[in-house]
Amino acid sequence: MKTTGNASASTSKTGGRLTGKDLINVGIFTAIYFVVVFAVACLGFIPILMAAICGIIPLIAGIPYMLFLTRARKFGMTTILGLLTGIIMFITGMGYFSIATGLVFGLIADLIWKSGSYASASRAILSHGVFSCWIIGNFLPFLITANTYLPTVRAQYGDAYVNELMTYLQPEMYPVLLVACFATGIIGGFIGRAILKKHFVRAGIA
Figure 1 (spheres, one colour):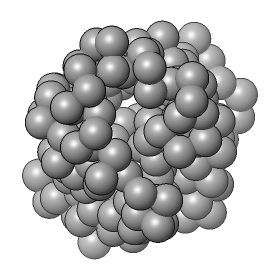
Figure 2: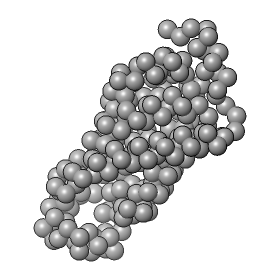
Figure 3: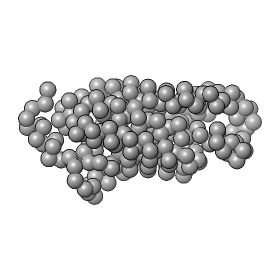
Figure 4: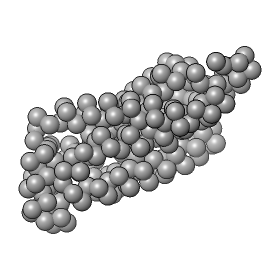
């Protein structure tokens, strides 16, 4: 249970305009988050694991994300995290849809976290579930711009890889992938909270 002192300390650090320190924190955690995403993405060299990334990344990324929320006590920080993540995905060749999904789901996650006054563990977990849905943007090029995107992938990984991958990325699978992002994001949030329990207590999040 939070003490009065913790609650007061937490409240005094929430709200207001973003400062340089806040933006530095966003930058640091964007880098950490990307390292996790990149490490898991290496599994994508195996087609079936590429499709499973939607459910794997949120399980691991929940740890740095939940730690980030102990420092993200102002509106806009989570939105920027999502946007920057999407931009990095675009730069690394995953298409531009991740910019949109990173911004949209980052904003919704930001609103959820704010609705809990930056002090609700349950809202933090829900926020991570929603935020994790940005990952679907990495797969949308295979569905929406396949004619221009697949030739690039074929040139890098070969016909056999693409042909097998596309058997898993049928149109009807995309709702399943989105649900997987959210569901494993919730689980990842619980994992992150459990591992970072002391950080949550110090931040006055209960």
